[in-house]
Length: 189
Image (tube, rainbow, N blue to C red; front, side):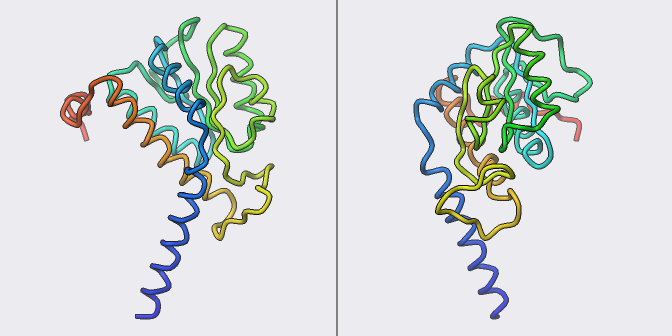
C-alpha cells in the first residue's frame, strides 16, 4: 500500500510541475503561433530526441485537422518555399543539426516558428516567431526552480500537453470536431 501512495505522490508532483510551467505561457506568443499555423500553406515540424517525439504527435494532429503537415524525416516531406512554415521544437535552441536546417529554411524564405526554453539561443535569434516554454533545458536551468524529474523530462512532458492545448485552440478556430478529425485518421493501423 505504501508503494501505491508513493506513486500517487510522484504523479501529483509531476502534474504540479507541468502546471507550473504551462501556467506562465505568454498569450501573445501563442496567438502569433496560431496565426502562423493557420496562414501556412505547408507545415514541416522538426525536433530531436524526446522533444522530437512530442512534436511528431503535434504534426500528426495538424494533419488530422486537414492541414498539409509533415515531420522532417518522413519520406513524403514535400519541397518547401515561401508561404510554408517550419515548426521547430528545441529546449536548448542550440542543437547544431536543427540549427543548420533552420538556416536552410531562412535562406529559402520559409517562415520559422521555434518552441524553446531559450529564446536568446542561436535558433531563437534566427526564428521569425518564438514561443517560450519555461522549463529547464540542458543548457538553461531555471533560477529558483528545480524539477524532481531527471534531465529534461519536464520540458518534454510540458511540450506534449502544450501541443495538445494548441490543437484544441486550432479546432475552435477552424470549426473542427472529433468527428471531422477522425474522418482524416488513417484506417491502416
